[in-house]
Every structure is written in C-alpha cells, then in structure tokens.
Amino acid sequence: MADNLTSPARRQVADPSDAPDRRVGHDPRRVQPQAKDAPADTTEKPIYRRTWFLILAAVGLVLLLIWGVRYYLYASDHETTDDAFVEGNAVRVSPRAAGQVLKVYVRDNQLVKKGTLLLEIDPRDYQAQLAQAEATVTSARAQRNTAQQASASRHSVIAQQQAQLAAAEASVAQAQAQARAAHAQAANDARNEQRYAELYKTDAVSRQRYDQALTTARASADQAAAADQRTQAARAQASQATAVVAQARNDYRQSTEQISVSDAQIAQAQAAADQARLQLSYTKLYATETGRVTGKAVDEGQTVAVGQQLLLITYGQLWVTANFKETQLTHMRVGQPVLLEVDTYPGKQFQGLVESFQRGTGARFSLLPAENATGNYVKVVQRIPVKIVFNGQPDLHLLAPGMSVTPEVDITVAPTQQAADTSHVEASPQVVDHAARHRVGPK
Image (cartoon, rainbow, N blue to C red; front, side, top):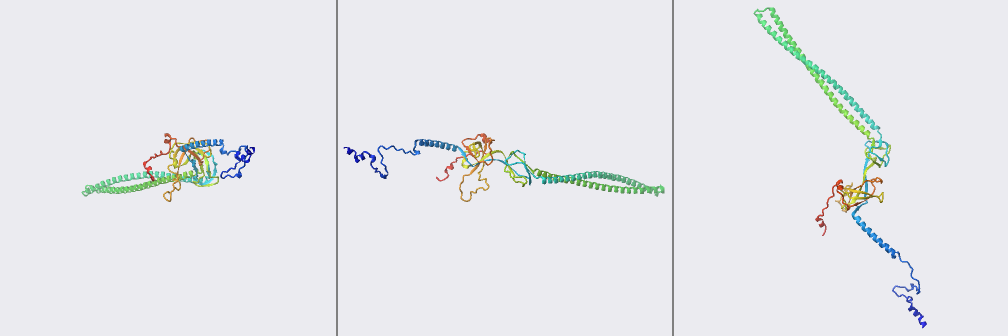
C-alpha cells in the first residue's frame, strides 16, 4: 500500500506542477521544474506599472488639461506677435557747408543737450568769402555817398539856375515895359512932328521949331528900336537860363537814379554778405534736440560734403511698432491695454496702450509693392503696423530703437471714450453682417 502511494505515477498525479505543459507554442525544454516548496517570484515591476507613477501621471494629465484650458482661454482673449520692435525719433545731423572737419566734440552714445556744439568745420574759406562780401558792401555804400553828394550839389545848381532864370525873366519884363514906353514916346513925337510939319507949311511955326520936332521924333523912333533890341536880348537870356535849368534838373534826376542804383547794389552786396555770414555759421553744427549720439561716422580731418550724414541723435519718447496679421485685428481697438516684453529683459513686462493703426499694410507701402493683377495669385496673410505707446516710459531700463518686443493685446477690454477721443486715428469702421455674405460660394 505504501509502495502504491509512493509510486512515480502517484507522485505525478499528486504534484501537478511536475506534469508537462502542453500549451500551444510552449517549448517544454525551456521549462525548469520547480520544487513544491520553492520561494515566490521577486522580479521588480516596470516603472510605468507602479502605483506612485500612475498617480503622478494622472495628476500631470489633470494639470496639463487645466493649463491647456487656461491657455486656450487666455489666447482667445489676447493677440500677440513676435514681429514687433521699439521705435523712436531720430534726427539726422548733416552739414550745410562742405569742408574739412576741424574738431569733433562728441563721442558715440554720448548724452547731449539741445544747443551743444557737436563739431566744427574749417571756417577759413567762408571767412574769406565773408570779408569779400563785406568789402563789396563798403564799396557800394561809398558809391552811394558819392551819388548822394552829387545829387545835393546838382540840387543847389538848380536853385541857382532858377534864380538866374527868374532874373532873366524880370529883365525881359523890364525890357518889354521900356520898349512899350519908347514906342509910345516915339508915336507921340511922330504925331508932334506931323503937326509941326502942317504948321510949317502955313508958316505958323518957324523952321527951327519944325526941325526940333523932327529931330525929337527920329530920336524917339531910335530909342523904341533900341528898346526892342534890348527886349530880344533879354528874351534870349531868359531862354538860355531856361535851358540851363532844364539841364540842371536832368542832371539832378540822373543823380537820384544813381542813388537808387547804389541802393540796389548795397542791398545785393548786403545779401551776399548775409549769405556768406550764414555759410560761415554752418561751419559749426549744434544739437537740435536733447538726446544721445548714435551712428557717429565722422572724425577730425575728414572732408565732408553738404547733406552727408555724420551722426544721429535719438530723442523723445519711444513706442513699439507691432506688425500684426490682418486676421488678428478683428477685435483690436484703440486704447486697449498691452503687455510688452522686451527680449533684452526676459520676464520683465511693460505696460502700454494701442494708439493707432496704419491705414494700409506694410507690403502696400513698400518700395516695390506687389502686383497681384498678373501671374498666378497666392493669397498671403498681410500684416498691418500697429503703434503701441508705453504707459510712462521707464527710466531704469535701457530701451533703444530696434529692440525686439513681444506685445500681448487684451482684446476683451473696451477702450474708454477718452482714449478714443485722444487718439490720432479715425474711429474703426463698423462691420455690417450683410445677408448676401451667406450666399457667397457653392450651396
């Protein structure tokens, strides 16, 4: 009985683990027999099957879902772009007079105030031109003084000649009066001579008395003729005096015209002198604004030309020009707040406001605008520059034109009426949802 219990067949039935595994695909040669009292399997589970990993993964998925939802909500309420840069005012300093640079008084990135002397050009050529122009002015003034003196002299000559003319005209009047008296006397003596002749024929008077009357008549006729000659002479003198007065007046008129010509020459010479003085002042270049020197491209001894850019002065407030896609401007309005992050200061955000929109895309105002009426057309989303101003420009950070900026515009905030009134742009047009737009395209 004991042998039957301990037989191999009985042990095989009593210990099922010793039976061969007849499963499909199982190789019995690879199975190692295990004793009935062998220890448990101590192999470690993979990390992704462990409980703590599964808990952490679930928490991570929940956090990722929460972050994704918040990011979606935030992104739907904000518009951002990385195509944005800091802009500012810059005045170009160029000479208005050519020449060799004598002295440069500023250096790169130096802070200068308005009216500060920047550089000086050799002024000797312009000083010589000014001296020549001033000499021309002096000569023109001397000519004018000469003409003025000649005019005064000729004016006095006119007075003298007019006095002589008046005397000659008085002489003519006197001679005419004397001639009239002589003719009257001659006529009276002639009548007396005729009466004495009639009386002499009748022997009423003596021959002597008749001869006296005849002699008196002849003498009166001679005196009348002499008076006529004196009148003619006085008239000739008066005519000569009149001609002299006319000549004196003509000379005076010429002298006054010479004064006018001298005045014009003085004005012309003075204008040339002022121009030379202005050109001399151009040899010193001063700062027109308070700012920083940028892009200095001039050194002492360098020969510069008129209009050549020597340096730039950046001044005034800075702003940001952000080139948003046209599809991002649907709900963007003037006065909406903006968070600005400059690449130079990661993690630091500045506050700003949308000030204005450019009335046109950047491609439209480029040097070579696209011509879409020819060739195959491929629609490309355009970008529109938007001007963003800082809310109080910071003083503790270095901001310069050209820096890259990432703006985030909160399009959910409605701008105040004050912001809309103080903006320099027109009100945004209202979009009308016309019924026809629903019928566009195939049905």
